[in-house]
Length: 424
Image 1 (cartoon, helix red, strand yellow):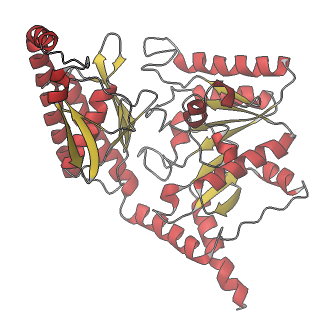
Image 2 (cartoon, rainbow, N blue to C red; image 1 turned 30 degrees about the vertical axis):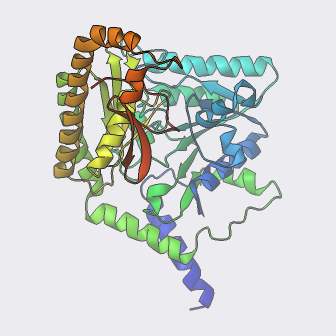
């Protein structure tokens, strides 16, 4: 066997195995990073029909390179209103809990899709041409958002009519994490298939690896442009061997089934917390992709940002790593390893239950002491105008080696959103 055969054998075997998870996966390109995959997806989309403009979802994040920051409101909104490029169009996030169309709407999927249609129509009036609509199959940084049924298909129909393609970013939710299906986009229905799919993170279980999947027609249009695509480490034998091992473990250890079983158990435990704690406004998710939306007021759905940050830091003391995200950073994100067990889920939720109980007890104490505290503060106002009470209740603590400022029982780092003080 020629030497070069040893180099392509692993690549060929990996591509064949991966393509078995969806019969519509015709052309696969193996790369090294998520950002490379989404950047290449944009190039494929723009070359296909020669269009330029991209529709993205509000609060979306698709990678850190310049081309992807341009289509990631999660990032470019931090730079001010002028940061959005003319070729970028932002559609509302299809969030049925705190979005434009909520769970009381008769058909939120169609309503959100109609907003995309309006964006396309407005762009065309201005002489713009849509190259692609890009979305995570379920938004992660946007707040663990599960798109309503039928949304993607209706959007894809409108985008295709405008000459564009649908790009599904599966970097966060692919490879069985959602349990019911191997790919997140399959939750929208068996008949829905994106034109381009990007993969990363779990594809190599921590090893730098990614993949772009597309149709033969789009791949051939890209190949005909005269500018070849080359990736130094994409599809190398080591990466392909790792990719094969990942697929093998997912099957042999039934990790997709585990995501369903443990995910259902975790969601059930969290919903019990919703019945118990007013701070829990919503519990949503599929498989091992779950979000808990914390609120100060369930009727108004006021984000409990400070409380979420406090919970994250207190969990670190128990060696539990969670993060809070979403536009208000009030949504606890559950995205554990797929080998996560029911015992793990029970332990995490028990700790959250304890922290929520302490927070609610603190709120009761604060309300009880509010009047005398106010009077005391006025009496002890120092010459510089600052509150002596506030100075007394402020201290510096360390959590996992990270210096944090504790004000009235609340942990907050300098680089987090400002936290409303709650007296304990």
